[in-house]
Image: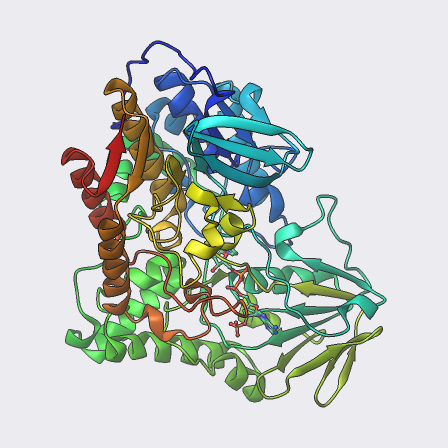
Length: 547
Ligand code: NAP
């Protein structure tokens, strides 16, 4: 099924380098990249991983309620039919523990851990043009070299902790959800403040509320959410998955978002109000991200989108008993799905509990954190624990913090001062032989991640195989190809409603000082896959390759 070269050429490392390839990160991307390069191309590969184990996002994000919002049978590798058939997921949406078991199973099954250096954080990556090598330094003081450097660092691994005055004076405990203590946090009897109502806060609130003495949710922007309807998988469904691996993969590879269902080919505005309501009701009952696939104009036509927004607003008002709280929870400032749409388990129901309160920090801004809690303009909320569900410096943060420098010492931070310009989300001019897996400029976070990851890893593997077979030593994009791609990324975003969410991390708007540029490619995964395949077929058009 995969397009990567399967005949391993003779194993050979460049004399000057420690390895042929260094890969940073041992999550979904890094593990598969290691497997492809080592076992299919016969290259020497070392993976550097900051964590003590494999898993990437799922190694760090173990906050209460954490759960993937892709359905388990599609949130996995599809490169191996045997792997797809032998692994059994237990629930519709997998939690971190089960995903970590899965990734450890993959790492052990393919004997990957022997080439991963754990507890190793990359502190710098410099390209040496004379030697055509990347020199990668680690926080332990080591320097490793390789001809190719591949970042597999994920899109959401650099925590965004807002700079709220007084945090250092807080006498309780505080945590960011993306750096959650592996031993867990005991909320029993505690007064908890939760800042943030993105996908993470919406998952965490109901679970924290179950044990905390009191939970105060600090909401800046009201967010849409649809019930996930998580449940154990039935034996029939598991059998279906095993018997239809090829078909499931075919659908995932042909859809806009890489999910195992197509977007319905009907328009909200050409459907009668009665039928539209019935279809939304059915999607609400089915649950999950499929809700977004009810009509194909939901993310392109504001009037169509308004019908979905009104439906969800009404649902919130039906669920939440206090009308003032319901009004705050449904006071949306952006179109539905223009921000990543969360799915939840009893999020809105949580606000009916006696021990839960909502604070609208637009109306009542946070002034500072005090030794005793959070003070807004009007009130001090006494707290024992503060949970920051405040997201990430998305897409670029994890790349820029590694101090990557290309030709002539050019830093990636400088090259991207006005936004992450690149070609196909894969490479940046001035940074030869550096590849990014699911970098900005690729569909990545707008897609079911394993689908986006496998496509990138396969493409990079094929590209490196092509170079070695043709005696080519260096690849980087041409400036004009990069300019054209940036224009295509902008055009794809502007053809949708996505840039209308002014506070979205897709736009970098959640991090002060970050350039406001729509980062992921919104033209659809299947279309992007074809663009990349065509570029390769046309002898890597837009890239400069040299011997
Ligand atoms: P997020 O979507 O960026 O949400 C952060 C939240 O914190 C927002 O509500 C934001 O408000 C709020 N916030 C940030 N700074 C604040 C401040 N100074 N004061 C008050 N509120 C503040 O982050 P996230 O929820 O961690 O999700 C990030 C992404 O991770 C998701 O979009 C998704 O791609 C992924 N994710 C996936 C899953 C899953 O698969 N189930 C689960 C969790 C996360 P504003 O909206 O006003 O900025």
